[in-house]
Image (cartoon, rainbow, N blue to C red; front, top):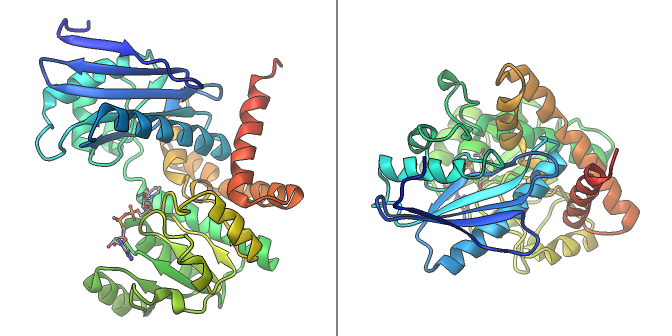
Length: 356
Ligand code: NAD
């Protein structure tokens, strides 16, 4: 039962199935949930906690991210739609078990149309509280029946994506002797470096954490380069694995690679930067197609019998087929690969809307 202190109000947003605000006086919760599209399945997307300047800013973010999840899942074939939720507040002070329990009640108000997971400033411990008041929570640990830490799966999926891009560009997925430059060797980029080296690639890494770079180079024999000058490296594949917006007007003229493929989200500063890469003859593997293994892994929690790793790996390997479809569509239509990915998502959603 929803406590009387809780006020849930729908906010009409064109093109979205349902967007709602929750304010709960008892816990101080102020949150928004956006369900963009459930044509392909319930809307799954993470819970973000951020100190937005205004509710308007939060609404802009939650709707933008929810729509992104629709496209990501449609191309990845997860059988899910797109949604997202944001809690407005200071990550340092706002967290209490009661606030997350109230958030669970808010999620429950969507009757399963929205399913949550981790995102910025939200960890498994927070989701455990959410789970007390709603079943629509994914991404808990294996011991709790969830799919666990997504990073190793994301890394493996990105390597599958890099192999698919190599196959399209060079006619072979064999990475032996290919020079791969990785920017950012954190949870995902670090594991990618290891897997790519195993496949015979020559690896150069850079990171703003010098200790991390030194440790990995010592253990695995990679080359390293300073972050400020890393784009001077002549390589076959450039793999941004740090932050977004790294591919922009300033960096594109410096690129010395045939392929851009990495795990970083929102890699292109603007969609038009995909057009510029195409004009330069650089094959761009769209970020959300390449880095979809996390959501694919989570989607397996919903298969009958619950999460199983074998099924997750089978689905993650399909990233290669999805990418090939994107590359072929881009060439057929003479458009950038990021635009082709969006078109492929729309085609799949439209097809599902047609009466059988
Ligand atoms: P992480 O924080 O573990 O690693 C990021 C690494 O990048 C860190 O080592 C950091 O020091 C480094 N870094 C930051 N700024 C840098 C810069 N300017 N130059 C070089 N290195 C820099 O994060 P992660 O989980 O590995 O995620 C990396 C990217 O992949 C993010 O954009 C994230 O949104 C995206 N992503 C991650 C997952 C996942 O499963 N973890 C899934 C999808 C997408």
